[in-house]
Length: 355
Ligand SMILES: *Cc1c(COP(=O)(O)O)cnc(C)c1O
Image (cartoon, rainbow, N blue to C red; front, top):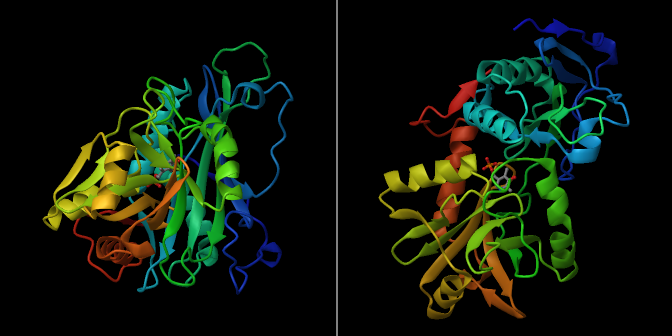
């Protein structure tokens, strides 16, 4: 790919603020990757240019019908001073799959990876060095043709922006409180729950606002048909560690196939833990809590890596898991995964890519 570099002069470049706030996603680096697509022409005009607003026609497809997808991954500054990406090929593949589902042109995997790496190279001084902090990478594709009919856009913009983020766990690795909703659903079979598309998140806002008012950090979604089987949490997949097995809901089509989820399954199986992907009902989880069979519960996702769940509210009752403490499996997974990401543990799976 031919990338045109239109970089700011060095004296106009800002630098990483010293005390990176936990305030995720408000600070952006100096440059962005930008590329356009047009039917009959293909991808063109790839460039890395100063971070700036995008000017679109008010009739652009994305505004009206949400033909848009995104990804989320991070660049980590390793203990050896080298910048690492964690399984970016998986993000590239998921992005292509999301594009197909939304009738958008795929960004070829190699192009996606080259765009990410080239941009992070330009902005390498923005990768924070503090353990737990990282440079969050947000690729996005949207339909921009000016046309009010409902059909796939004939024009697209693909861009990547970068946002330095502070450590998720500043005051220790502490469990969160989640609210199980049986009033709202996130996704239906045959829908787009397994696609990182903007509309899914707009549709989830009402439930999470209501949960927040009640003092819970995130919503745990149940399946749309029975409102009985566990799906996932906010922007995380979920795991339940029972006495003899680690269980996570099977990818039913309405659950986002998380890269952290897949990595956790592979690691624990190699540690000799029985890990299964199957249907799991909210009743089974509550029974497990009551009988003590459920030892741990945690969410998995790029943002927090592993997020222990200490409390679960369902139908007016609150249940405590593992006395509200982080369990040993969650802790071990967190240490192992972040160890690979920051380069102080071996990477037996070849998950890390350097710039
Ligand atoms: C991104 C996301 C996840 C987690 O995926 P990772 O690849 O592990 O970061 C889980 N659920 C939803 C709804 C998501 O958007």
